[in-house]
Image (cartoon, rainbow, N blue to C red; front, side, top):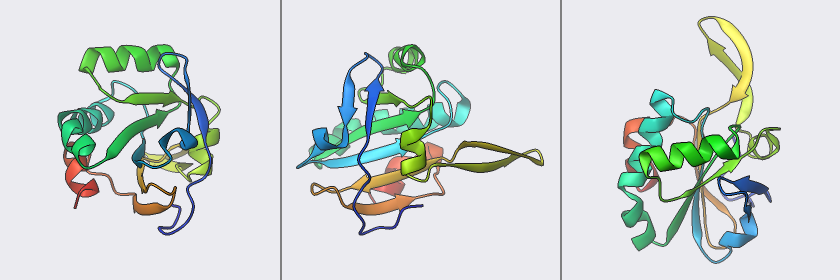
Length: 148
């Protein structure tokens, strides 16, 4: 994981509507940038819905929320609509953003080792500095982890 106190890596990606989203779009704002494995799976849905249910709290505290996964923009659009997610989801099919944020690596599933998305969240301040890095995400209570 990237260390707190370091500059967040630049990123640029396409959201669910085909719009380009960049780290610089959030200059002067606090950003919760979360990486998750797959749209509409149980853990990812629980995490997204927890963030959705607390979205007004994030906004009131000056935070924007953005999710990133390898899913397509069309998949993100369906996921957002189905669960009424109020934040953008970036499609990163070639895992460039995931790699830049050290959220891509080896995973073990039933004893089999594969490469994939490591569920990770970074809190980035108004100046683009990582102020918190969460690697052990509690999908159902993620907001509490972020706002601790």
